[in-house]
Length: 76
Image (cartoon, rainbow, N blue to C red; front, top):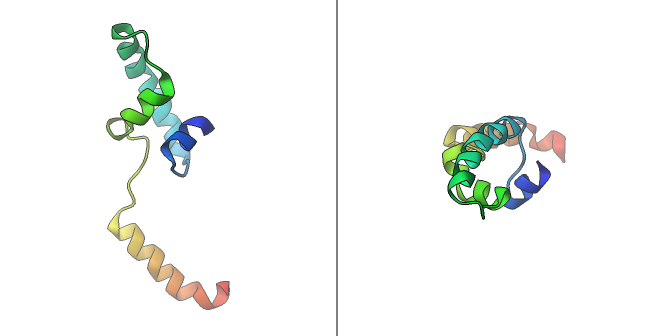
């Protein structure tokens, strides 16, 4: 799983391993059509449709900024 995360250049989250296992079914189907496929490169190519890397939503960025404002003095 670490090689998948490093290929994406993204932070690995717990839900991502579940999504990788789910995507193995689709990879197996694609492999039947093209035996030359490589798993990691295929996952990187289709990570958007497989839901492997989650987007950071505007609300999450706003909440993170608010938390940083609140706790900035305690963190320094």
